[in-house]
Image (cartoon, rainbow, N blue to C red; front, side, top):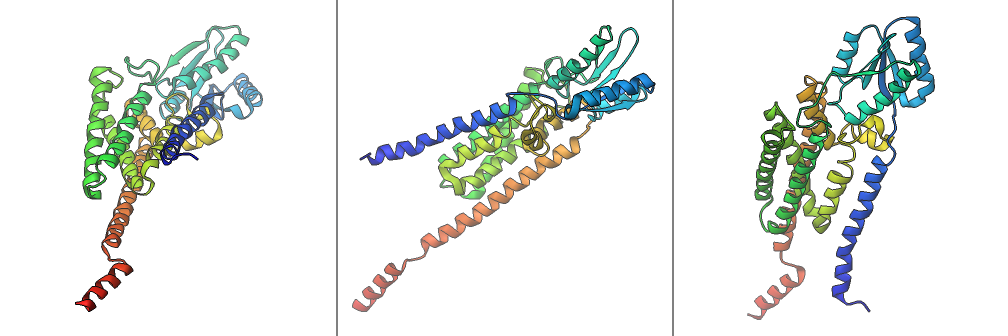
Length: 340
C-alpha cells in the first residue's frame, strides 16, 4: 500500500504532466501546419485582365484567399494601413509590385509574397515587394512585441503564485493592492526593456506601457480571484488561460489568417491579442483597431476585479462560519453552565 507521502507527491506530480499535455496540445495544435484561411488580398486596377486575374485567384484559392479589386495604389495603401488587407498586388508589364505591411505580421506578409510570387513568375517578371508599414529597426521580424508579451505574462502570473502562497493570511484587499503594485512594476520593467534597452519599441512608450499595465493587471486580478477557489491548481489554470490559449492566439508568431478556426477565433478577444495587436495599431497603423483591443483588455480586467470581489465575499463568509460555535460546542457550554 502506498504511503500517504507518496500519494500526496503523486497528486502534485499530476500538475506538470497536465502542463506538458496542455502545452503540447496548444502549441502543436496552433502552429503545426500554418496555411492561409480567408487571407484578405487585393489586385489593383480596373482592366479586364485585372478582373480575370482576381477571379482566377478566387477560384484557385478557395477558402484560403479573399480577393478584391481596387482601382488604384493609394486605396490599396490606405486599406493596408487600416489593417483591412494583408497584401495588394499591382500588375505591370515590366515589374509588378506587391504591397505588404510587415509590422502587422511578418509571417502573413511572407504568405502573401508566396502567393503573388507565383503569379509574377507565371508572368515572367521579377516581383518588387514594398513594405508600407515597417516595424522598428530593433524589431525587424515584427515579433518583438510578442516576446514582450511573454515577459509581462510570466511576471504577472508568477506574482499571483507568490501572493497566493506567501500572502494567504492577508486580507483580500491587501492582496489586491500588492497585485496592483506588482502589475505596475512588471509593466515598467517591460517598457524599459522593450524601449531604451532593446529598441523593440522606438516611440509611443506611454501608450505601450499603459497597454502593458492593463494586460498585467488583468492577469493578476483573475489569478488572485481564482486562488481563493482553486488553491494549488491556480498555477495550472493560469497556465491554461495565459500561456496555452494566450501565446498561441496573440498573433505574435502567426496571425489568425494562418491558423485553424479555433485559435483564429480566440484571437478576436483574448487578452494577449489585445496587447499585441493594440500595440501594433498604436505604433505602426495610426491607432487602427486600437479601440477594440483596448476594450478587450478592460473587459479582462473587469472580469478579474469581479472575481476578486466574489472571492473576498466568499472568504469573509467562510471566516464568519469558522468563528461560529458548532452544535457540540454549544451543548458542552450548556452542560457546563448547568453543572455550575
